[in-house]
Length: 302
Image (tube, rainbow, N blue to C red; front, side):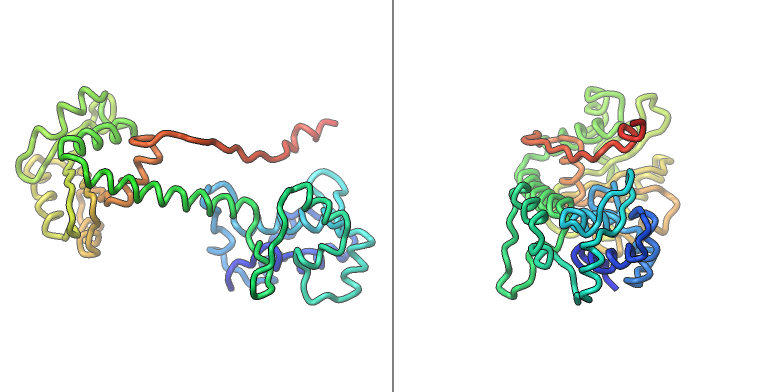
């Protein structure tokens, strides 16, 4: 089944504490996973940041909201147990515990008011907030990033071939290829024969060479173009190449690359824009947010 949202986890999580013993979220993960019949892939699915699994993040926020409502309490660092209120809630046998259910408890309402976020019901009557705060932030970040990538790709397609070559040079240098912009600039755009647009050192010591084709294309790049590039590499006795395009590659082209001995990396327009964002090429930071957590080690020596 799909990974449950954090509100769906609340009631099963509270049941896990019904034995009156203290538990950590980490200790309960396998029990909750079995409850929701989650596969290994689902358990290992990460948030876009790659810092935490989605299921662990949602279970953690379910615990947070249950604690704010007074149904759970911290017994010691990272461990929680059920309260008398929590026992009374379970005794009432509710079909579901969610944010709407928790609004009956003054401590939870006060927490939400301090948080500065009020739940707004959808037209269907369901709770709007089905995602944890981290997921909401990361979704917003991904939306901004995708819009930026699309805008970058439009500008790249409008640029001159010379500007595009300089852009590729700067990106590759920032990624750690070539010795310097000056060295890389002498390599890219000056070979121009046999389907090769340039060469660049794989590292600053020049231990290996990578051949490059960088083209602003409107149409999908097919297998014949990749075969031509691979043939050019063989003529240079080279086994490493990067094919960069502002369009996309056909499935046949991608399959061909995966079936040959030469190491060919295909970078389409979408990935090019994403790399430009990652390595600050053509973009500039506007605002930075830091998400922090409690340092358990700091409080462990008290």
